[in-house]
Amino acid sequence: MITVGLTRDIISWLADPRLAMGCVIAVVVWQGTPFYTMTFLAGLQAIPRELYEAAEIDGASVVRQFVHITVPRLRTIFLTTVMLSTIWTATNLQFVLILTRGGPANRTEIFPHLAYVTALGARRLGMGAAVSLAFFPLLVILIILLTRRMLSQTDD
Image (cartoon, rainbow, N blue to C red):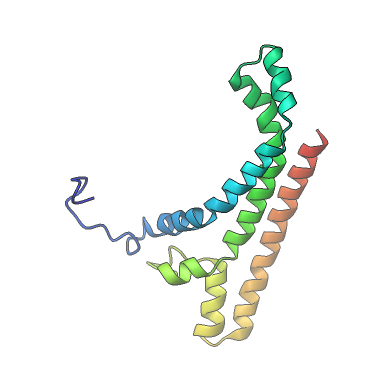
């Protein structure tokens, strides 16, 4: 960025409390991109071509085909992908541990890292287990909500 002339200062991406979580999120998104891409590609290939042909004969534009055929057919795949990526991201300790170790100023602290630091770093295994178990109901509630949403949309 300095070479291009966007800034004159060196930016400490992982040391700045305002930027650290964004950096961790960017790495997690980058890591999940192949999964998201393959999932949506499989979903797109599962949509029968005849639906698009019939819509084209009826005079539907490309935008209308996308809104009325593609989006409804990919809704379940989208919700499944969101649910899986939420579970994987919420329980993913490795990126926070490698990139920031929960810092700076605990801005990237997540439940799995807190449980890890409490159980292994502070040698308080019981408290670390309690932190993990406190996080579990939140994750279960999120999964239930996403599953209900997914099932209600497939019934439509």
